[in-house]
Image (cartoon, rainbow, N blue to C red):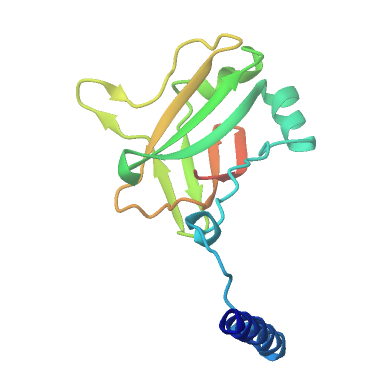
Length: 169
């Protein structure tokens, strides 16, 4: 019985000594008693993408040019940049589909102006049909050499239409 009490007293005294030592050590030396994969995993990135043309800019493109949902995306491993837009008012958006207007995509950072490539049997890689309300349209710009990168701010110019500050996704 006395051996049990001696062992018990040793465990209690040892526990007290360890807790005092842990309380006096600097905070950087302490490690959590239990760790799981969830605690050590990096935090997930936030995938929130705000409306790129909210407020006045979005209102400008809707009222003056009859389009919204403007975007520029890296496609085909960066070999082309695809410009998309949705038509709200076909009469105002007519210039974007005009065959006579030569579109260009300018990247001030890279100092380049991209053009739409023309394929032998297909023709220019853009839609030129009469615009219809509610439909989305696209055109692709050749990015040979991948000079325009993801995250670059580009300008799309089609005749008198100009969309400044599109971010390439």
